[in-house]
Image (cartoon, rainbow, N blue to C red; front, side, top):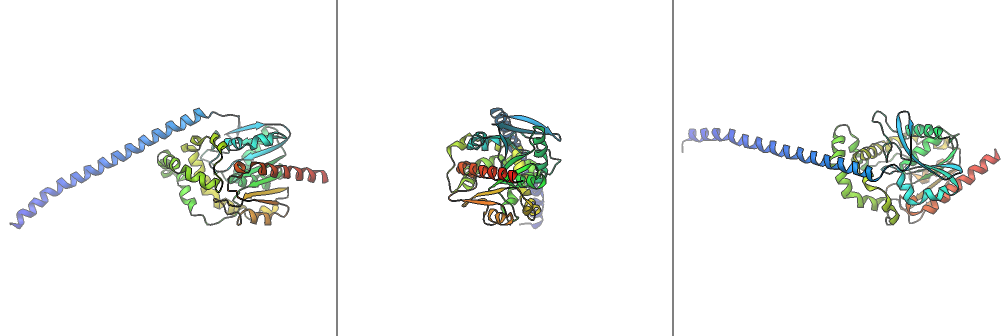
Length: 340
């Protein structure tokens, strides 16, 4: 065989193979882009459908240009309920806690920024301290200057920040299933991805809602375990929680979780009002020994209720005990005020 002819033949075939390879790459890229666009359109449709199916049940306040959704029930001394990351007003409503509190109190529940029907402007870093300021100003608009504040999970950080920043406003504090001190949590990196600029926007409009739907049962098992998910939680609007906008809010709060705990870790001893700390002994999300137990040691006047056979979602699975914690703080704060 003539070597020169073979070389010429190879040279003639190379451009063709390169063209074919290039065409394959272009085709694959076009298919991928089309799939992402189709997924984004589907998620946009599901987002709008979720909002149509779950219209606002309360009223709105505008505070510093932020539209804040809240519900209010009952009469008496005010009690403020602040939900956790990824949640919204309906979590407290379907748990039955709102109805229990409303029997003897004026209960006010907020959709925190970015959750439910409340805005979350991207120009603001929504730390617990910043959210505390927003809620304080919202409460001032509706005539609340003194209240018991309950925060669950991430909401406990906001409640603690409110009490530290506005001690005259917070007459008593209930901190449920909270994260108060920085620890190593590798899973936070993955949870925070949809909050990243550009890449995060692509993820939350395409893959994140789909992955969240697939992993929803596992997540529910983790946050409710060792208890099963109660039937009443079926009223929680899952599709609202899976909207791209709320996924971004959840991711942003996951990213803030450790640095915010670092900022607050040495300030808890400054809390002087009655404080009740309550947590599930078998919480799979947060280690209560490094969090709630340590907080109890740092806040000298606090009481701590460690609930046996309970996980993270104690307001859902141990609603009466959480209500008892509110009543305990209410009685203690009334006695303190009378002594003064």
